[in-house]
Image (cartoon, rainbow, N blue to C red; front, top):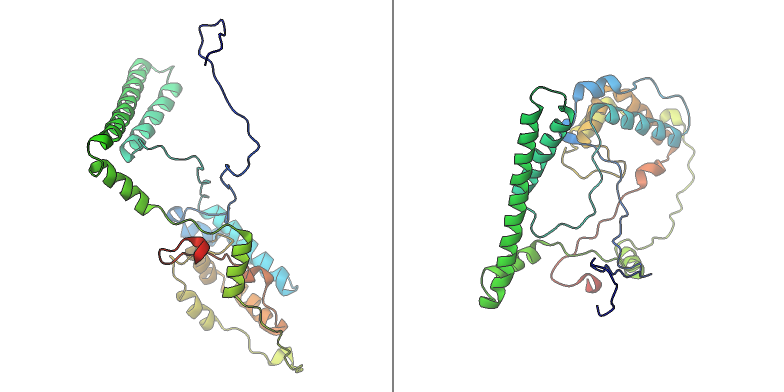
Amino acid sequence: MDIYTVSDHNVILWEITNDQNTRRSTKKLNTVAWKVKSFDLSVLVIALDSDPIVGGCVEEMTKDLMKRVTQACEACMPRKRSINQRPSVHWWSDHISVLRKECLRKRRRSQRGYRRSNSAEIVAEYKKARRCLNKAIKDSKRCCEELISGVDKDPWGRPYKVVMTRLKIQPMPSPTCPQLLQNIVTALFPQQRILRYPSVQCDPNDIPPVTESELMEACNRLGNNKALGLDGIPNIALKTAIKTSPKLFLDTYSTCLKEGTFPRKWKQQRLVLIPKGKKPPMET
């Protein structure tokens, strides 16, 4: 910069732009999720409200049922934290992550133990952990700089292999163009003409209810690792709720058959487009 500022400080420049396309989308498809590893079966059994659902339409019964299961999940396992949207740095590693956790743990310990008799020893341990973390970060940055400087000497050597490895593991981005998405959905799910079913009068009492054996058979076929729905309820929690209070689910399913209605809440699903082949998303 050629402008004289009459100051011994460095000049800081920044640029303001109205371009909104540079921001990453932070929209979450599923904001509710629980840590399945912390699932406590005994707590869910106690927390699940097994009282009969008060009469109403299928939509109200479904809403009440899923509300009870959600509250039981809140009681038996903690929620997952939101995903960090900050981009990762090239010098970060698992070893640095472990050192950072240890450094933060000792820092909190030193802050809480300033009145203890061994406070000086605790502070010394924290400073030692901080030095180890800083040294690991500097060593990692130095290795990255050496890797970059080695490109001119050996362009097809180790730097090239590292870059190609990182490029291969990156997933192909999904299409985001609204018109393209509309065309894909229309091709995958073509609109069908409305079927006119003959109006047949049927006595609701003649419709056989869902039996407990049928419910348990369907429950046992549900895998624990199967993809979750929009409600984020883990399958292991849903299976436990069914086996704990099967009558809640039997009443709801039997009401669906009698009314001939499938709950609107259970019709909602998330469509995931998986690119196949080496074609870009715009050409698939």
